[in-house]
Length: 317
Image (cartoon, one colour):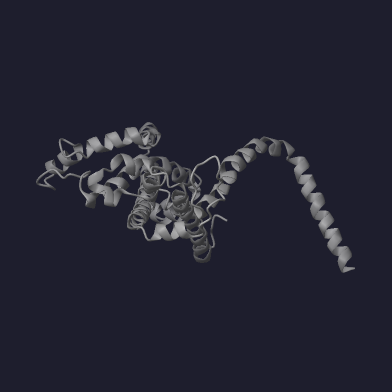
């Protein structure tokens, strides 16, 4: 009797599954090229991770599985002072980008939303997200010019406002590099990220604002008690996604904005991999660093998701 019920349940589930495939076969056909693309370029290369456990040297007579060394590359990695410094810089700049980037993007979205003139609103939004389309090569040239010690606009402004007495060498002093990096990231990406929050704001029911207006709430109170609480689910999801990218600082920004004077605070894992791994032919060593970064990213995103679900009942998965 029980077995009969289980078989019936399985048959019903299979029938429903086949029915869904039949109903959505066009969508599935469209998705096949994307599935092949993802498998080819995102999952097949994962086989190369095995290189992290070998002492691989490119040669026609050797394969990646030769010269297996176990965890020696990771031991070498964590005993390397330059790598540990790169890890510190990556975490620090990643955390600053996530926290301050989110704050500025939300603030910008709220401010743009409060602009009532339609034309001015469009111009403000367009100007704010245009830097996103600049490559880091162009963006870094602008940033280095603005922060230059010799006639840079930032120093000229601070001197005019009498905040400083003499120009500051922003791009040549170690203690300012994280500030330069985070400011650059905020300038380049806040406008683009704000689009997501603006979209979330447009989904908020106008009835809530009308009710608040009748109750005597001013615009600041409407933002505080209606807009911000309604934005919180979107902010949490974006935060969880960004936490997974904490160690993905990339190399363009640090490589182009950094120099030998600030290398101790500008070196991140990606530039370290290029300089000491690929640049010196230590492919296994570079793979170990990349593998470490990927594993930490997965752990971070799972942890952030669990914390969010436990604290608020909301998560990405």
